[in-house]
Length: 276
Image (cartoon, rainbow, N blue to C red; front, side, top):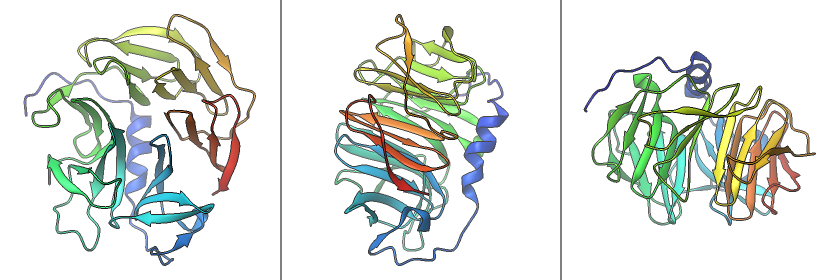
């Protein structure tokens, strides 16, 4: 791997990302539908614009019949991303997977039913992973650094970043990356080579770049802006300790201390769809 000078990533981010690694014993039959509260270590939530997913210590769960059902292999999914109907994941192998630990980047061409190694097998555990077109960027927890690739995951570089708590890539321009740092948003227009402050918003720790706008979250509030040049409006819906946001198409999914909240109108309104 080609190395560049590294700055230390925010300790709060690393502590948060590393917290999901503790091994737990699964208590339910994952072949059927289960309650959200029965899932062990939900690391993040996501949507592909049609379904809602929970990336957990025991695999990828999809919401069906108001319950959660395991899709594909049982393995510890830390980082999860979707791009052009392809699923990407990183983490640790499951009991029936013949893969080294960590798994590097896995890819699924069938919606998460089967997974194959793509790159960095046995080398990297991404606790945050974003994929847009041929550009990959993620937080490699075991290396305490950020890695990026601009050729579909074949070659990787380390990225020097300011301190941050979350990142998101522009789905319509894969060289643009937003960082949230607790004080606002920072933008890189050259895929992590340089950053500049673009928005001051106290307490913002989460960011999600959507096709039709940008979502930024503080501890209890979600803001939405059409672009970085306009204003960000606070949503009326109240959250409690937001831990993850993901948006695709008309769907926006938010996880907080209460449970998982879903919007089907691009964030205008939300409903609690399941409790933790």
